[in-house]
Amino acid sequence: MKVRRSFSITMANMLKKIGVLLQKIFGGEFSIFLLFLVITFFFWFAQKMSRNYEYSMQIPVQIVDVPDNVRLTGSATDKVIVTLNGKGLALWKSSRKKEKVLEINSLSYKMTRGRAVLSSQFVRDSIQNFITIGTVIRSIEPDTLSFLYEEQRLERLPVFYEGVTESKNQYIMDNYYTTPDSVDVFVTESAGSVDALYVDLASVGLDADTVVVYAKLKSLPGVYADNDEVVLTLCSSQYTEKSLTIPVRGVNFPQGKMLKSFPSRVEVVFWVKMSEYDVVTEQDFAVVVDYNDILEGLSDKVMLRMYSVPADVERVRIIPQTVEYLVEDVYNGLW
Image 1: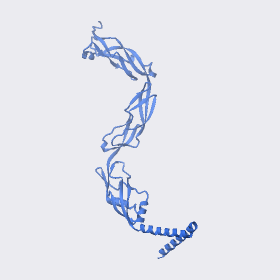
Image 2 (image 1 turned 120 degrees about the vertical axis):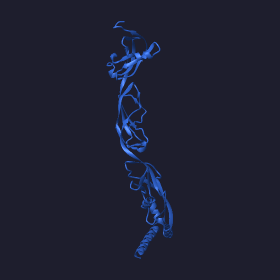
Image 3 (image 1 turned 180 degrees about the horizontal axis):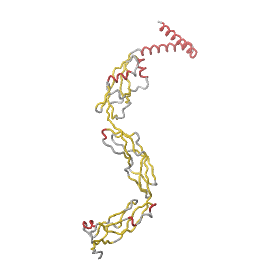
Image 4 (image 1 turned 180 degrees about the vertical axis):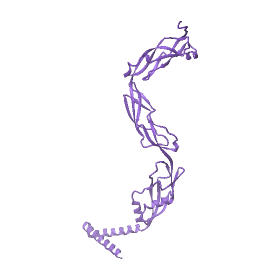
C-alpha cells in the first residue's frame, strides 16, 4: 500500500513539473492539451506493454575452445531462430540485450565418428540465459545442433621451392633457402601422409646476386598452417659464354684398337661464372666416342658424349655433335 502511494505521489509530482514546463513554453490552454496528450500516450503504451506477444530473434552460434587435435569441417547451422512469448515490456528487454551469442565449448557436446551433437535441452537452457524473466521460449529452430569434425595431428614440415628461375642478364641460381625453413601444420586424417610444403611460385626472375621474395605456401587438402607465408631467398651468379677446343678421345675400346675421328678436335661451348672465367680450362673437359655406340651404329658417324664436365658450368653443348670415325688396329704400339 505504501509502495503504490509513493508511486502515485511520484507520478503526480512529475506530471506537475511537466505541466509547469509546458506552460512556460506554450502558454496555458495548449500546454494543458499537451499534458493530457502525454498522459493518454503513457496509458496507451502501458496497456500495450501489458499484453502478450510473440517475437522471433536470431542468435549466432559460435564454437569455442576447440581441442588442438580436432578440426571442424562443417556445421549444420551458424545461428538459431528463437520464438518467444511474453508481455511486451519483457520481450522488448530481451530484444535489447547485447552480445547474444550461443557459445559452445568442448564440454557441451559428444563426439562420435566425426560428428558432434548437442542436445535440444542444452540449447534451450543456454538460450534461457539471454531472455528476461517472464518470457517463455515457444520454439527453437533447429532445436538440435550438430557439426562435423576430423581428428588432426601436429607436424613440422620442411619448405621447398620447386619452381623455375627466369634468367635475366645471364644469372643462374646457385641455391636457395626459405625463412623459416620449416613450418608447424595441422594434418587431418583425410590428408594422409604429407612430407613437405612448397612455395606457391611458378617462377622467379633473377636479376641480381640475391633475390628476396615474400611468398605464400601452396595449400594442400587437409593441411592447415597458422603461418602460410615464407621469405624465399635465391642466391645466383652471373654467367658468361665461353668456348674451348677439346680433343676427341675413345673409351671402352678393346685392346689393340684405337679411334681416329674426323675432326679430331671439337668446340665445346658453355656458360661459366664470370668470376671463374679464367679458371675453367681445356683440361676440365673430356669429349669421347664410346665404342659401344660404334657397335650399335649403322652409319659412318657416331654421337659424341661429354665424359667430364666441371661442376660450375652450365648449358654445355658440343659443336658438332657427331663425327666421322675409323677404328684402327694397333699391334704392340705400332700401326
